[in-house]
Image (tube, rainbow, N blue to C red; front, top):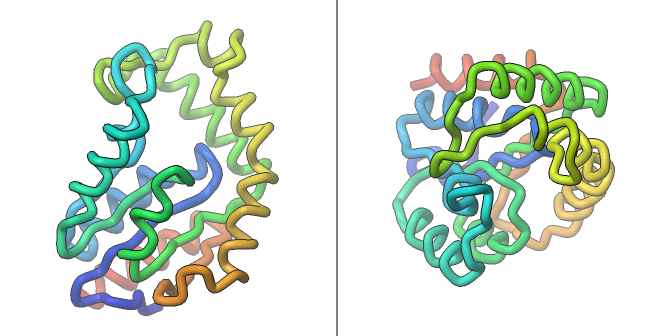
Length: 184
């Protein structure tokens, strides 16, 4: 599978929350030898406070000024900044059951390990399972909206320079990464 703009790739990895965008984009950036832009790390401040919109947009603009990159995240508020520079969108379009299972496993593992995320933030049992900010509730309530959003964007040709790669199973993601490593 070829990625458009492979000499200077600018790739956006999208998918519903907990589809594995961060993990996949890290591997993809290593496979093609470019930097990774994690939109979550640019968006979230300490204590899970979102950065002001103007600051977030500026951080994103600076990050994508590079010649090549892999960016992961679904932030519609910066899509008009990121996607016009993109050459490829990789859509991790996994089933609801798979994504919810991945979300549960990841959340429990992070709660148990105390893994530090962006700017000192950590997932907690209270926040993850017993609050309105629960990532599991977020996945359940946004999954179908994301499916519709990306289906519509793909069909719209709103970003005509972008080629779409739709990945429907983690095995396909592994095959794509392996083919890129072998080609490099």
